[in-house]
Image (cartoon, rainbow, N blue to C red; front, side, top):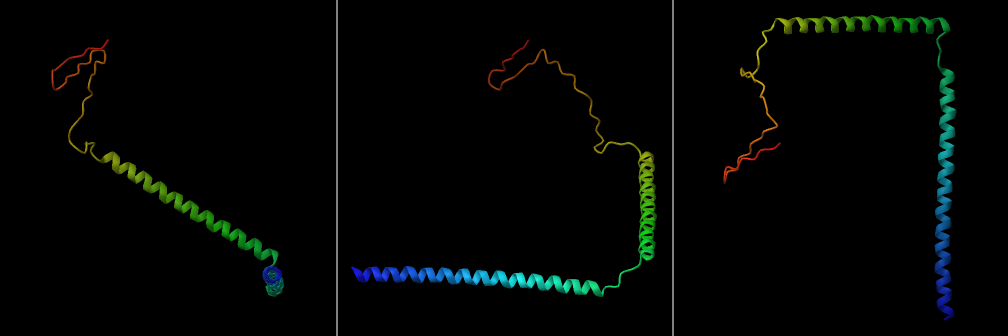
Amino acid sequence: MPELRSVKNQGLSALAGHRNSQNDKIGIRNQESMKAIIKFIQEARTELAKVSWPDRKTVINLTLTVIGVSLVFAVFIASVDYVFTEGIKLLTNFAPATSSSGITAEPIDLDVDNIEVETPEDNIQVETE
C-alpha cells in the first residue's frame, strides 16, 4: 500500500506543478501585454509631439468655411427637393383621374337585422332579431 500512496502523491504534485507553470505563463503574458500597452502609449505621445498643430486663426477660418459650405449645400438640396415635389404635384393634378381597373365599386347596403343563411342541403332560412 505505501507504494500506491507514493504514486498518487507524485501524480498530484505533478498536477500541481502543471497548474503553477500555467499560472506563470499567464502572469508572463499579462506582463508582456502591459509592457506592449505602455510602449504604444509612449510611441503615440512621441508622434503627437511631432504634429504641427494649426494656430487659432486657421482653425476658426476652416471651421467657418466648413459651416458655410454645409449651409450652401443644405439650401441647394432643400430647393431641389422643393422643385421636384411641386413638379410631381403639378403632374399628378394634370393627369386624368381614372381608376386602374375601369370598374367602379358601389357601396352595398346591408340590413344586419334580417340576415338569411342558406345551406346547401335543406335551404333553411334563419332570421335573427
